[in-house]
Image (cartoon, rainbow, N blue to C red; front, side, top):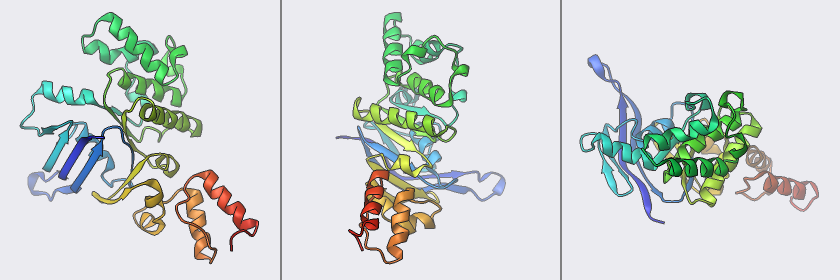
Length: 289
């Protein structure tokens, strides 16, 4: 897989006007994101993870450092409005509240909004609407009113609207935060489908450790800096550093960790519910000391 996004020593300061001291939101962040990766980004509130997302989608521009997207270095001084628009077509964004992203009174009209603004032929727009709604499992709701849908269904319609633009990458900025467990599962399943079946690069910013555990790679940001970057099993086995920066491991992983502190001989790197349950069953049956 080739590198799709590169950040080099990325730094962003907020404020600093009228002699005030600026607030550093990101500090010296260097990342390489390959095309087709499925990455979860974790961090406490104010850690800088959403700021990073806005930088990658060119909603914000860095104070220092460099961003390269699909082989092109992007800086506010060096890009025309058309070039910025073209880059944003490659990186879609799904936000926390789907109501803020839905613009039409009928589902299929909402999905059509982006392609229509691209000036595509009617036949192409129709094909993109159908394909996008099929991808998120919402084709049967094409003629429904978005405001009558559940939270998870609304978010899937918002995702379909982004898919219809045919980006290479989608950033989900805490897109499951306002949903109930069923809605979160629906949206996370859609992310996996986009990545596994469509080869799309997925960046999932989340507070839910169980969601992050489903990704191929986990990046932890703390106080504007990268604290950890690795496979979920590697990152979540480091329970103490996670807790120190205001996060936690998946509940099952944390339970096994606490039991190990009490003297139980348990393996590390167990992160799924089934893995943790199997390990506990072995412990209770006496197969582990």
